[in-house]
Image (cartoon, rainbow, N blue to C red):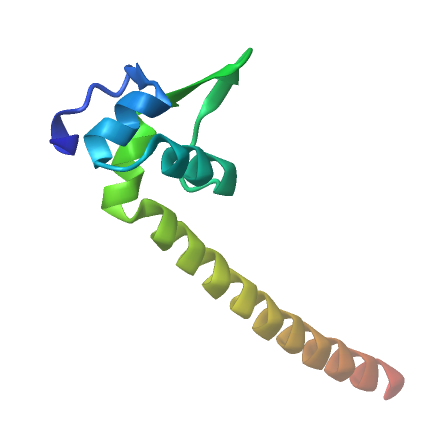
Length: 95
């Protein structure tokens, strides 16, 4: 069903609730938590079809895991830089 979604189409929270067999309130909660991307126009939300496909492709989870990995690598890089600076400082004193 979701592989045939028109990526230029936008849905109302009510339509999404029906498609996902969820309550309308649950869809609004998902929007508020950022699990479903939606744009608010005045008092109404519109949910792009691509936002729904992310729910099922795991893209959000992949991005989250990549962010965690990047954060871990930053700590490692900082440690390597600290060691390199110590060595550079030590070797510059020997001149």
